[in-house]
Image (cartoon, rainbow, N blue to C red):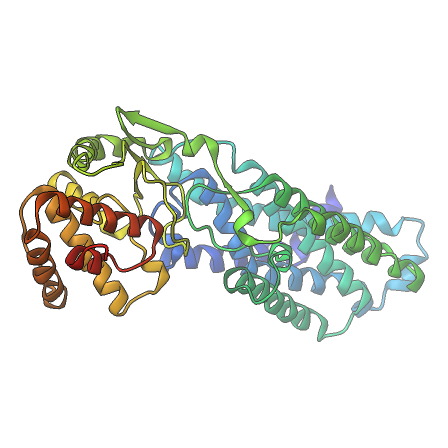
Length: 446
């Protein structure tokens, strides 16, 4: 125990968690990012409180690996390798004390970061699930694998350039795998092998068991390789460090899905529906039900004017701002708490928002701006006004009103059955994200 205390005092171990927390908590607390807003914020749910630290490992891992590399080259830089090798005390014992000191310090820093988010979730009464458990194990294992790898490489290459070069290499590799998980530059498997995981898109995003098992095998392989390098005394044994890396890849790669869309499944506990009649929200947002129940029921009542009208209002578990467009279930009106269109809305304003597009969600992901989106917005506004039975122009948007005014006039100029048919047809286009709903409202289906 005395040797362990000495390692803690005389190595960089105490400074590793400090550096980790300065970087990670500095970002989480004092900068605006995807971790700071919406239901996927790092302090909103147990799952996101654990997943965001894994995302930030892309910045913490270079600190961990670089610090461990400095300690790994300590004996060689001090010129005592042969001296220690001649003592009866096994080299593994000395390495174990050093690795334990660094590993414990880095793990404590990581767990403090997780606890900072979880503490806020508990303080606000956030929903408890067990979905975070495996993610926490993978995060801690990533930290320990970084310590083992840094110690091993430092022992193998005891040169002044080793630690900074290794830190830069790890940072570059982590950023590449993280970015490739977003824009698809590399395969999905490459993204999943990265230490810094892709940012959570929503509070229900839970990696599938196959993904977690594959990442577990990969991290164990990295850790084992680092331990072999640290303990090896000959070049022949050092070559064996490739075996656990290869074994980890052999297990992980077949388990990883081919597409990133298949990486996640909803957290079943958080996504379970809580209903008030035909209006349902997820258990995670159960306190929102009292806000949406009344408007939701009114929306369904007004949509009964249409053939094949929806019969339920249901909160979607799809990540907000994803790029998936159509087809949608015609029997449901979907809503998302993180949608900017629903922020702070209740009562009449929420009713009108849900009636937009005759109870459909936008297809904007298909084009992101321009003429097509403006025409869709105009059509969605007109459909909502028709369902409530009176027209008011859209507020503070003249370009939109230039489209809604003539569309409303053209729609009201035809008999009631034709109006119903046009709105129903326009709604169908919104459900499938095809065609031009504004044209259908003004000219009919011809």
